Length: 232
Image 1 (cartoon, rainbow, N blue to C red):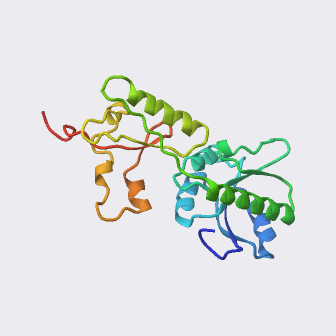
Image 2: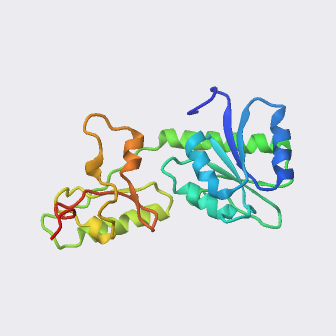
Image 3: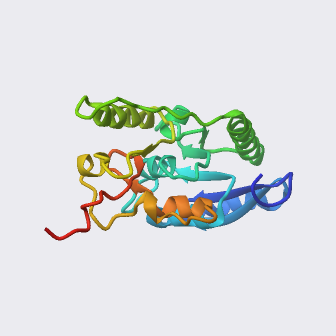
């Protein structure tokens, strides 16, 4: 666990039906293995709460209404730099299958008991953090001895394909002076740059600050071209 005691699972609930939220509160009130951090009723505010509270598991109602629907929120959570497992609440009339690649790590169908809730949240949390500890990062370098042979396009397409199958992907342009990715992605001149990183100590927040996310969902860490800030 990143937070809390070793045996405590920190849970964030995203639910806009007061009766369902209260029912879940009641189920969790008499036990100590799961701590309910907060109940978010507006899907547009859920991502911010996840980033601030860093829960171990997020419980999302698939029938969530408002500007951001339930399954659209699940997709947003899947794309966060801070990946968190999601259990989706549903009803028998709206069957949903678990799919980690789509950000659905578990499904709980209403009505359910306190035992069902505890078992599902505990199982998802255990499976996710076990696989997370076994997961290793991988670097794929696309290189060519000369320009104009398509390595920029290949690198971008590879990153998009990896992102679409659920891999957290960051695309880095290693050509600090003559990189083409910024132009290919139509990144604004004043967008964050890898050159904005501190030179003494780099922390996780520093890396987030220089990432630029493409509409495809791929995060990029790009230099500024030498001429980008020059007025011609």
